[in-house]
Image (cartoon, rainbow, N blue to C red; front, side, top):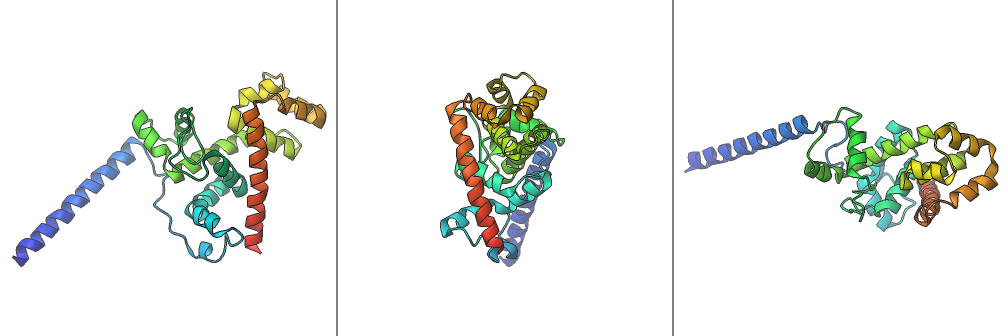
Length: 239
């Protein structure tokens, strides 16, 4: 009986190992997840040492799940962690499974086509639509792709000299799309948008922003305020 049980346990473990290996191989071969998707991140000592101490208990309980990914991807892409936190707060309220009525998915509310275009830039293979949708809800992947999108928009806006204008155009473009933003400035090219932002003054800039959809204007106000709050919280936690 002992030998039989030992053999049964051995075969069960062997079957699990083979199945897990084949599933992992399939995902790695078919999608190429190694760049963005990381194992579940347990809060390390640096988080336990009051890295988020200035936030309320409820806020900490939410942030501690995603802060390692936010910090890592923000550092890689050169984006402010507080900005990423503010965008996630406004886009999804830190709910990784949320899907908008337009089909935007996950923490940073990415459209599947946009997300997979960003993913393929790093050599990720195209998967079926069903698998794409499932993977984009993965928090680490979603954050990585969303931060990359923010970084790319910031790069486009880099020639704009005023930092507040640059931030406003970045967030407006993330929400409404770059073409909609250019249209609000009566521009068809980035050269036109850059020139008007740098030379037409803050009055013209504010007037152009008012031509954006009400949803985008509200989004801009909320995320700008949230970014300040998160930045203050992170700075207070560091002191």
